[in-house]
Amino acid sequence: MPELALLGGTPVRTKPFPAWPIWDEKDVEAITRALKNGKWGIAPPEQSEVARFEKEYAAYHGAKHGICVHSGTTAIRIALQALGAGYGDEIIAPAYTFIGTVTPIIDVGAVPVFVDIDPRTYTIDPAAVEAAITPRTVGIVPVHFGGCPCDMDALLAIAKKHNLWIMEDAAQAWGAQWNGTGVGHIGAAGIFSFQSSKNVNAGEGGIVLTDDDDLSELIRSFSNCGRSSQGVWYGHYRIAGNYRMSQILAALLSVQFSRYPEQHRRRESNARYLARKLAEIPGFTVLERKPPVTAHAQHLFIWRYDRDAFGGLSRAKFIEAMHKEGIPISPGYSIPLYKQPVFLEKSFDPKHAAQRVDFGSIQCAATEKACAEEALWLTQPILLGETSDMDDIVAAALKVRDNAHLLLER
Image 1 (tube, rainbow, N blue to C red):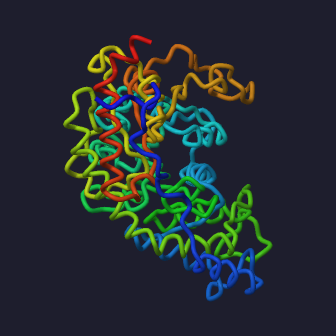
Image 2 (tube, helix red, strand yellow; image 1 turned 90 degrees about the horizontal axis):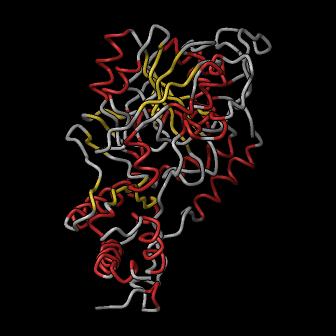
Image 3 (cartoon, rainbow, N blue to C red; image 1 turned 180 degrees about the vertical axis):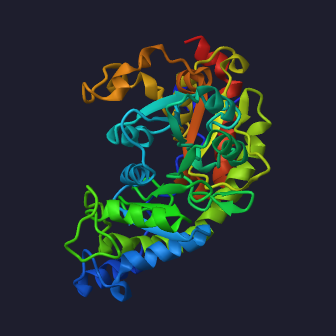
């Protein structure tokens, strides 16, 4: 039996996984073109890298409108503003997501209502959503977590029943589809992120998609100093900031995005292969992919760890052993959002409506289990490797499992 690298043996893998970001001279040429154009901020439509990318990206998802901004978090904020979210409104969101999903809710004066995830998918649990609705509820912010679409059929039915809007956080779900429809415009609006870790990335950036003409006008106004497409340049019709994307960033995004269909195909293929292999190992449960998920962005490959099947070996020790074998897995989020210091200490405006919430009393069992003992993540660049790279992940996991008793004896 091969000795664990953690105990002095030879690791399964010493070769690095694919590096990220991926770029070449085409990216340099695009940036140079935008630089030489001299229109680094707002540009006429025929010269605008931003306008071109907005159209390309919206069309890829089947959406009517796309509005670029400088981050995914900003995209959420202005989408919430455009949807009319304000002081004292309650907006339901999952407790297992990045904090950027919910800080915009606080920013617009609304109250985040944290609900649990479905442990089979790690996306928001529709039953928990319905149970959390009160007379103050105005909307739902489901997160297509890791690139996997939420159960949009169930969520749309709930929203219709209670007269709520849905704003999709698709920050990790470029090209993901529910029943053949691109996410991000299944609800009233949706957002995507282009931050440096993302599958489509330019360091920073975000976009809002919508099929609603009036909502699109509002979103663009809130991103552009409150201007109106029907007004004069120095006419300002709403209190708003300047959240526009630069032309240089959009030029880089266009090139990065041109590679995405092939990268998406490779991630999907490797993820399906890896899921089949890991599912054969007792103690691992790969997250469920429901039939309506016709495309998964595979920003994260996530599976669930059962320490009992490993003789009681802790997740932390399993991860340490895998790292020594050359596999950079992660436990992901270690703290549910409602246990983040900002919420426990209520580090926001003393007059904010969220001050009335006892965040310390919230308990979401599936979220807490994912954070504390269960979730294992692989990040998206790993899925750009070869089939042999996926085999190394499986081999390392089997090696640690077969030697788990030795780690328990230490």
